[in-house]
Amino acid sequence: MMTMREPAPNPWIAVRPGEDFGLLAERTSVAHQSFVESAGTDAAVRSVVRDSWLRSRGNGVSPDGPDDSVAIDGIELERYRKTHRLAAIRPVVRRLLVDDVVDTGLLIAISDDRGRLLWVEGDIAAKDRALHMNFVEGADWSEDRVGTNAPGTALELDHGVQIFAAEHFNRAVHDWSCSAAPVHDPVTGLILGAIDITGGPRVATPEALALVRATVAAVEAELRVQALTAPPIASGPARLEVLGHGRPVLLLDRERLELSRRHAEILVLLAEHPEGLTADHLGVLLDEGELDTVTVRAEMSRLRRVFGAHRLGSRPYRLLAPLESDLSDVRAHLDRGDVESALRLYEGPVLAGSDSPGIAEVREDLWARVQATVLRCGDQRVLASWTNSIHGRLDRDSWVEYLSTLDSRSLLHAQAVAHLRMLDRRFGAHL
Image 1 (spheres, rainbow, N blue to C red):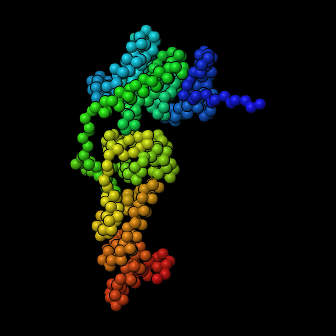
Image 2: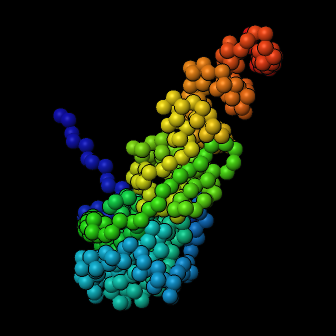
Image 3: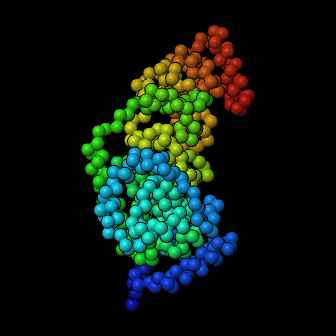
């Protein structure tokens, strides 16, 4: 008789129904001590927690003592909170969570997308106790900064998660448990921040995470309504210049901005893939070594500050606004058969210094299209312009075609023959 296989445990849930809090806390504490005191990578904890511990150790996070620094405070914090997108949904969070946790030992926190705590509300006694682990408004609770914790790890993984007791990387947080989930912009898909419940062991049960997710759903619905009723964001034209050996340039809202090569590569690849790219796919296109998703997300975060968050979507990454470029201009002229205009605009290879596999493919495709159009037109002037340019002077096929348009008695014919012989000597071909 066949037996039904039990479903695999949900890795995002810390405490399963019926599980003993005390026994689980003891096992987790032993696993944490063993991991911290050894250089190994194995740990008798959930894979989500083990992977987070490995990242925490790799980032140099100390497992001992709280990080007592505050990222932003005072007037700076007040100004930042007033202008943050999540300020508008705070009444929803208060109604669904905060109003019911007075005298329960629970705290409700809202963080921004970097893990900085914007608001921490709830039980007064719990807030006082939380001071000892620096769980306060303005503190940075990103995983990079304090190690494994629900709001920081939820942002890192872009997924709702629970962290129970000693699953926290920092020992100062071992008396607490938490459930958190990221909040996304319903229009762009970008992460805006996270909502977290922190308290005792019951916060790590499935019901607690379900409550957080339900609150996030309500918050995102409210943001969607606000987006529909808000006036449109004024957005000027954007244009990218990536042809040639100079530094890539972004013309944005009448400003001329020099871009890093990586940011220019990303914009070109997103323009080539209007359907969007996952972080994994984008990493493969950017680097033969396949950039990890954390690096890709960091680059996208920096690019948004330059290009504008309203122009870039995520999940998958994609362009939300038109992006013109010298690359698209050359292609448009080639499509119309206007080869002379295309050659005039073709100032050089696409991002000449880039070794990105995706950019190399775009670069080779454009050169091949230009060459094919030049050969097909058979125009002597066009062939002369192409073969005497830096782009076509080593293009043997075009030199052969150019030679066929010349009078065999002319000086230009003799010069073309000499050039072809030079190419033959260099590359081993034969005229």
